[in-house]
Amino acid sequence: MSISHVQRPDLPEYMTWAELERLPEEIAGQIELWNGRVVWVRRGPAEHQDCTNLLWTTLRRCARQDMHSQLEHCWRVSTETNVFFGNTGKSDFVTPDFLVYRCLEEEYQDIRATDVNLAGEVLSPSNTERDIEAKKARYAGAGIPWYWEVLLGRGPRRINIVRAFALETGHGRLPDGVSPLRPANYVVAGEWTSANTDGIVFDFPFPIRIPWSELEF
Image (cartoon, rainbow, N blue to C red; front, side):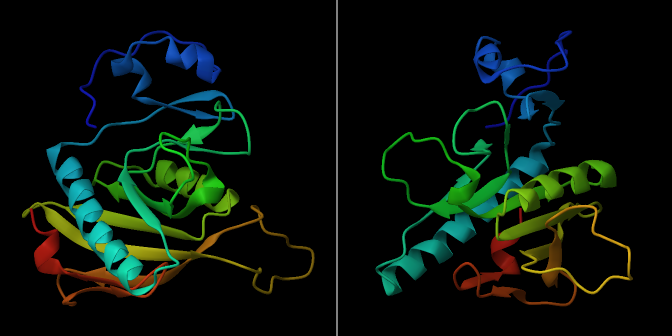
């Protein structure tokens, strides 16, 4: 759900989920908790919401086709839904723009990172590289197998690029004495542009076929 911008109140640097729940929804909806640290999340323009809804619609169609052909598979596709890290507790979470996760046993059950197979972010030109990489690192550290970036352009307003990233299962060779900064990372596994491809064709986490005509808004 799109949250209208309101003036940010003076909040402590760290909060618990219980404290966050006591805030008005128009404030709490703009916050993620990263190990309890308050992280303000910028809500994008209307184009951002339109794009997120298009990804939800097309991925949901592909997920349903897979479930019809593979009866043992059960997928859910959602937008702007909290994903909680760890097996318990709720004071460490992020809110992807769109996500694919396994069907849960109970309705209204909290979604844990271990349930998620794909997390995606819609990136406007105003998004900073630092913010993008910080959130991507959180997804990788949680072991989410697939991460997608959807880049919006200007003039005309449209989806320019879609990138699919796969979680590394092992580190590449590094010089002696050098170790990776993070224990897990993503590598680009697919890239599609509106200028030179007919659409998205990818086979993970299920067969995905999305023509560009379905991503126009």
